Image 1 (cartoon, rainbow over the protein chains, first blue to last red):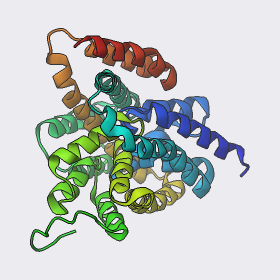
Image 2 (image 1 turned 180 degrees about the horizontal axis):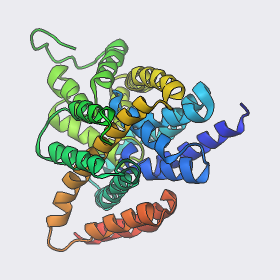
Image 3 (image 1 turned 180 degrees about the vertical axis):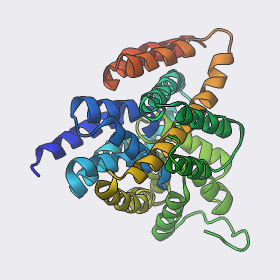
Image 4 (image 1 turned 45 degrees about the vertical axis):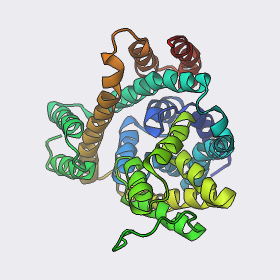
Length: 175
Length: 187
């Protein structure tokens, strides 16, 4: 294991963290583009699997970067990817928090936030699209996606139950 | 995590309390940690009022990067300075990282198994559904207003990233200034 994959992980996730408006879910398409298409670290299927594992794991969604990092360069890769994805924005958060009271009501602050919401929305929709191309390869998988979307939209069922049902349906060989 | 009676408001949680509280949130949170953080901080520990929580969370959302991660840093710093920020972040990330590393090892070893890949295929299909629900909830307030630019920018961002497959930094730097400018002149 040489150092170049670690350097690539560090630089790439540090850059990504600064453009991830709307959280980890908004950064999925870019992670997919780089991991699958540009760097060829993994296949479409493996990327979708890692997304699924991150979803069924407890904790913040951002831990998918640890899975990608581990796949590329073992434990060191997981540590580097997670640190790069969280470090820069944590430092920013720490220092901006001290001056937040001074500009929280400023017009420019509100305009920036309002202007970024549609971008987050478009990016999360892109995440759904990129993953659906891999996941929804037949009618049954598409039906699971549609049913889960409806349940999550109209009810407050813990998503874990939907994952359990979907996992069992997958295991039974319908997908 | 489960006090028998409502405790008096603890205005200054210790570092150990901060760590344990965020660790508790991290291992009980599925499908996004925010609702769990809100429940722990506002309802159980009463470290913040709903208004204080919302305002602190607004700051976390304003910044780039994972919102809940930002939140843990801002919250920890408020009660314990740099050490508080580090401890809250470690609580939020530490336990899930350990769990996910075990899963990563299992996946590298057994990922090729037909059984596992079938289960994961089902879960991915469901997870895509959850994302679609998130999109629908976010889109509802943006698309009902009579005249506003938000839907156009959402569609452009989607097109650039999902259909054109352009790098996110380019799409972001191309759209964000224009979208923010529209938001600026709207009022």
